[in-house]
Image 1 (cartoon, rainbow, N blue to C red):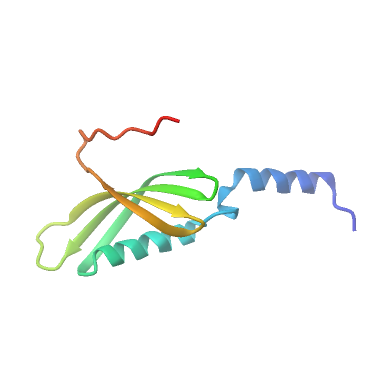
Image 2 (cartoon, rainbow, N blue to C red):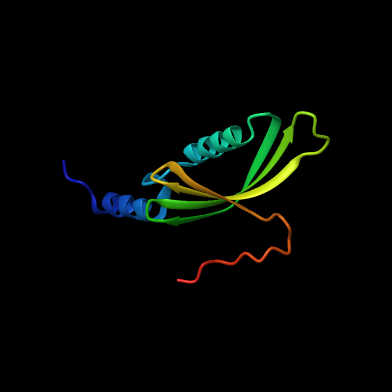
Length: 110
């Protein structure tokens, strides 16, 4: 069976443009974030999270996530923002960053 050149070029194009094939898929990302929120806020009665941004570098992914958590006996939701480092589909580090709009967070210069 001979593979057609268009098939090989299409496969190459997808493998270069779809980073999720080699890394955590979107469903895995949701599972990782959900697990983090459940472990970090075990007493929460409800929660919601929003992914603000993701950055890929090889098998590493940095996820900027915003969480809204309602805990027992609390009148208002707690709002937090985190950077999650996911390496090879595993959560390896978490950093809480300020929610305020005046926070002095900048991208790392390389």
